[in-house]
Image 1 (cartoon, rainbow, N blue to C red):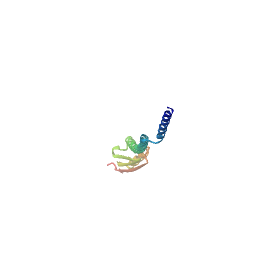
Image 2: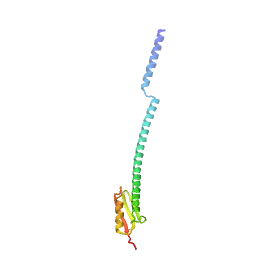
Image 3: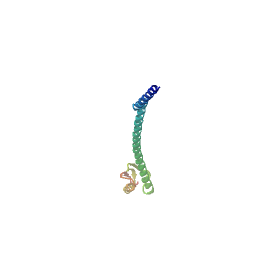
Image 4: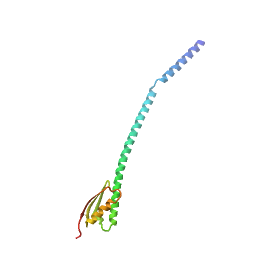
Length: 140
């Protein structure tokens, strides 16, 4: 009987030892888990890269929109200043602003009004340069 118990004990010990050895070897489930983890890491990195690219593009578009809004604001300020000036006829002066550069076109009735329009445009915050293309049309 003692021999049978010894064999059982030896058998159980061998099964236990084989189980421990098997735990050290990666099985299909462990390999699959590692593959899933690797794929998730790669997907996460791709998502992060995409988010960064989108943020850069949005920043660039925001800057462009900011410049356009600044240009529209500059144009509005210049036109308001012309409207407040009784000597300038606002409907005859066109104001175009691109990246802070203002182009004046149309007609005025004297060189003095042309110079005044140019000076007023140049005095508005954000204006980097004024291109005066106003034509002097003397009163008839």
